[in-house]
Image 1 (cartoon, rainbow, N blue to C red):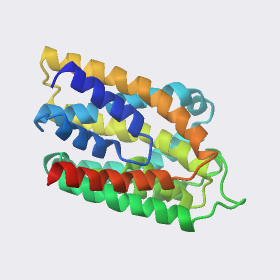
Image 2 (image 1 turned 120 degrees about the vertical axis):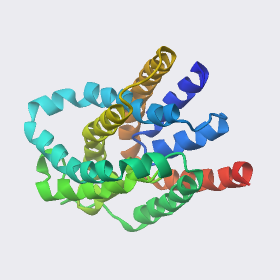
Image 3 (image 1 turned 180 degrees about the vertical axis):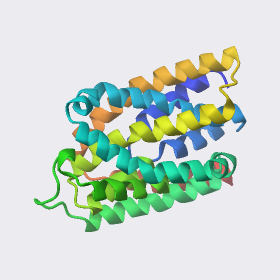
Image 4 (image 1 turned 90 degrees about the vertical axis):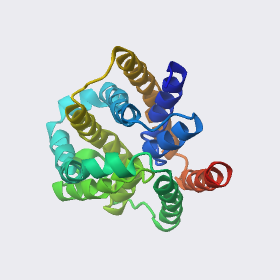
Length: 257
């Protein structure tokens, strides 16, 4: 894997992490198209560059977290299910699910249908919770349960948490912003666990690749977050659902067969 590959993958990570289209799924498919062999470093790279996206969230929402500590409590409550499932199934996820293109394509396609159906039948109501401060702990925990589905590549952490929040009667913007914040402990935990498991035993060249990847995902995530908040004020997620289905079909027909 060279620096051009790293730049491409980091941009994909930053753009897709907070969109309901699965960043992990895109990284798996992009690695296949770039001809990168799915080795141990690639798997760690795909996990660790998420820290760049975390830094983007901290830049945009760090002040909010400092001013309202109750939001931190809600985020940590929501993280509990993911922490349990992620720690328990880490060997299975990294050894079996990650870089499994068939599972990724199936999850992308099915997730697209779920997004479309959700948008067609779910209607936001005036009494839906507006603002993370109005959420209760039970809603926070259940959103975390929804997030556990994203251990499957292609499911999309953003989609599962946004849909979960909307089902639990959060306004669209509140569900999206809570999804941003829940990414902080989730991705930090995934990265920390991978660093512990691998003992951060990377060569100097690999550390350089990781640094470039982190920087690329940080810059693109900043742009993606602001763009998504603007987008949801005027559009539904149906276009993302259609995109997921088309991507899965095209990749299957043109690459897998």
